[in-house]
Image (spheres, rainbow, N blue to C red):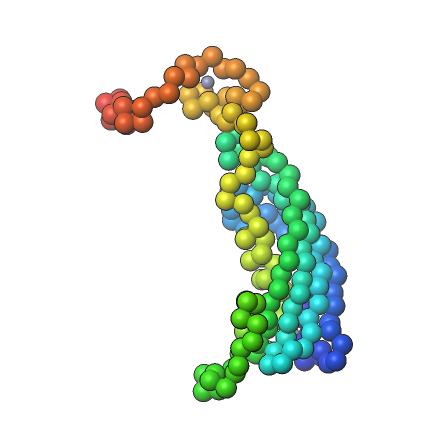
Length: 172
Ligand SMILES: [Zn+2]
Ligand SMILES: [Zn+2]
């Protein structure tokens, strides 16, 4: 979505767009897939610049942090930004920033391409940790079996990690 900043007058510029992005392009191994993304919002003039209010809705497929099974998670997120024209360094002191709670993005040129904003937001929305269920049993550390689905029969006695390290040294 390209927003023509120079064409925004009294009326806000509004958009509504469906887009698809390749999950792999975000280069996060825990993100397995992305559904169609609904990206909508508006930009309006505000003293000294513009204000962007956007909303993203989509589904993401992430892997469970314990058992690695895929799970589909609906996501809704708000994007609120203040857009400012990039200004020469000399003029910097003349700008009074208001609404310091909004993230400010400096724009060069007459239009802004929101794809980069969307990509950043998608990155932020990937959880550090996902669980298919709080009681997920994870994978067997010995044979890799999914312990939610099968009982592999491996010895599940907890091994002292220090002992395990020594053992690895000796075996290696
Ligand atoms: Zn799981
Ligand atoms: Zn096992």
